[in-house]
Amino acid sequence: MKYLIALLLLISSTFLFAQKEDDGGFVGFNSTSKTPSKEKTSLFKVGIIPFLFGQIYGTGELRFNYERVIAKKQSILAGVSYVFPNLFGLALYSSGASGGRGSNGGYSGYGSRPGILDANYAFEGVRGMLGYRYYLLRRGAPHGIYVGPYMSYNFVNVSEKAAPQNYEGLNYFDVCAVFGVQAVSSKHFVFDLTTGLGYKDNFISNPNNNMDLNSQTIPITPFDHVKFLIQLNFGYGL
Image 1 (tube, helix red, strand yellow):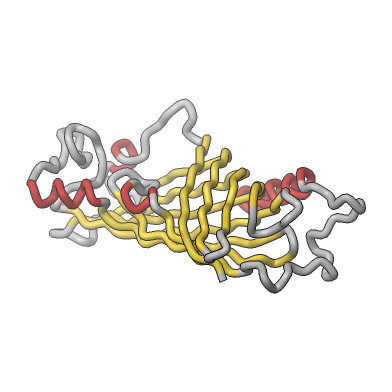
Image 2 (tube, helix red, strand yellow):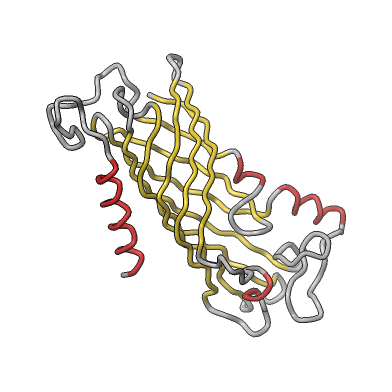
């Protein structure tokens, strides 16, 4: 319920900051203000940064985003990621440099840093994302500066290869207010840069005494619930 309330508050704040047209009318849901047919209304994008550095330490994400223009200045966004051991982790697997179980029962990653990179453990997961954008410039969606709410949920299951019944789930939830800029060329190429600030809640599901991931993989910091967001996407518009 608290996540739903947070999302509704962000959507409300988006409308408060949304600009009006010169004629004083807000065109957001006005059926007479359709996006011109020559504009790109469907955008398919891939994330560059998460392939190397995923949200959860030691992971990468194969991420696909779809943005759909729904009115002159508005669009909705949906995305999905497959979560896997990132390239650095795979290199350390092959070199034998990854650490084993630490003296405190946790899992060591590359170097002395804690993580879930260990050849004795398997992990995989999925991430889902939803968002809404309001474009501030006169040209409208999907061009230029935009604001809006964004939320994602990332789940990774970590298990022992030799004893699959020993497993835990890493859960990362966040909801943010975003600010970004998008450029769509005449040849359909898309560049999209997003930044944001919001709330996050990282927690363990099905905690297992044999797998001390709570202290090893989800660190406790003074900004434990503060989410800083940055995304870089490239794609193609139709």
